Image 1 (cartoon, helix red, strand yellow):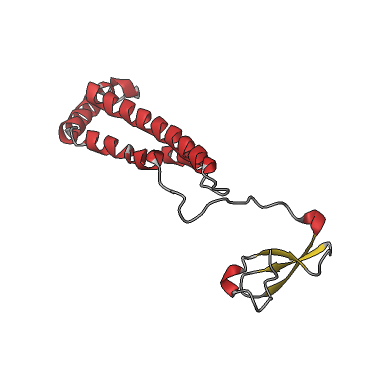
Image 2: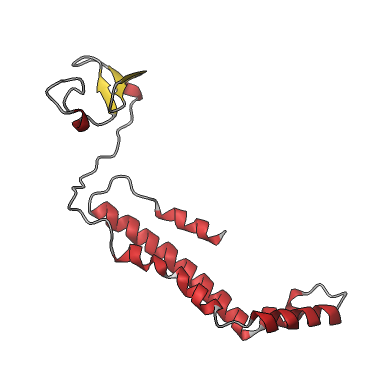
Length: 158
C-alpha cells in the first residue's frame, strides 16, 4: 500500500489502517484517512483484517435478501383474525372461570385460527433465519469480507 502522506497520491486513495512507522519497522501507527493518530502498535499485536475482493460492479442484493419480506406474511395472516370476538370470548371465559389458572381453559388459546397464526409465525421466523444464513454465505462467495452475520436474525424472536 502506498504511503498515506505521499503527496502524489490522492488523499481519498489512502484507506484508514495501520501503517509501518518506517520501512521494515515492527511499530505501526494508525492512519485515520486524514491524518496520523497517536495510536501505536507492535507488529505482533496486529490482527490481520479480512480483505475484500468486492468491486463496484459486485451485486449486493440477491434473492435471499429479497425473501426477507416473508415476515410480512404473518402480518397479512393477522388481517383474517377477528380479534374483537376472540377477546370477547376470552373475557367471557375468564369471568366464568374466575379461580382457574389453566391457560388452555381459554378457548382463544386453542382456537384453530390462533394456532394457525402462531404456527405460521414460527415457520416464517425459521425461514428468515435460514435465508439470512444463505445471504451471509452468498455475500461471502462474491467477496464481501465483512458482512452482516446471519445469527442476528435470531433477534427477531424478541
